Length: 202
Ligand SMILES: C[S@@+](CC[C@H](N)C(=O)[O-])C[C@H]1O[C@@H](n2cnc3c(N)ncnc32)[C@H](O)[C@@H]1O
Image (cartoon, rainbow, N blue to C red; front, side):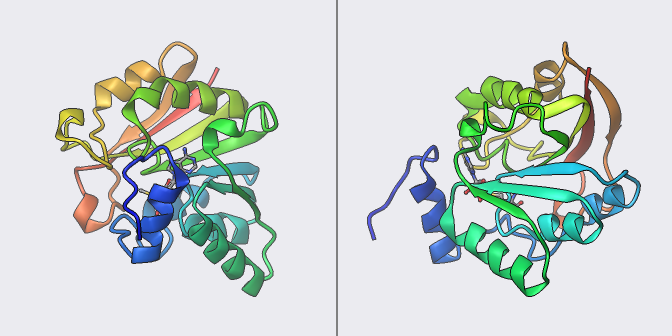
């Protein structure tokens, strides 16, 4: 198989799934999001770079209307099969997240971010910030588990390093922070390396 090094292309990620090189995959729903979803009012949630979509299933079971987006075919197929076997109605979109606008402008109450931001080309981080702002309704929430905080961008990736002050700067003027903590529910390998920061769109 030809090696594909361009992280901006779906084929790079598809190859990772086909080879089983998916160290980021928890194999189950994310405990931090499980805890959060129990406190939220059900609404429209978008999961960016959803991977195998365990959290999509979990939110859908709780009555949220879920849209899960990933440009790699294998995880989208896996999620579709899982949703079908559970008779859950989940919108799956096999598309580049940066192509969701204008079709999905102001559609969502919540966006879930987990290891998508650190997977994209760091030069696209401002574009990512604009994207989530466009996707959310006013008052909508960007619920992010930001990581890896213990890595610098110059160390390369993916995952590319993420710094708390960078995130807070990117989501500053048009946002307010409503939650900011190191969650107790983080899985052991990510404790202290990921931070839950929830931004509300003003
Ligand atoms: C590190 S994985 C994380 C997957 C999932 N969030 C998880 O935690 O298991 C990054 C995912 O984002 C997807 N991805 C990366 N860039 C993307 C883009 N521009 N548009 C859509 N999906 C993208 C990849 O295909 C991959 O499934």
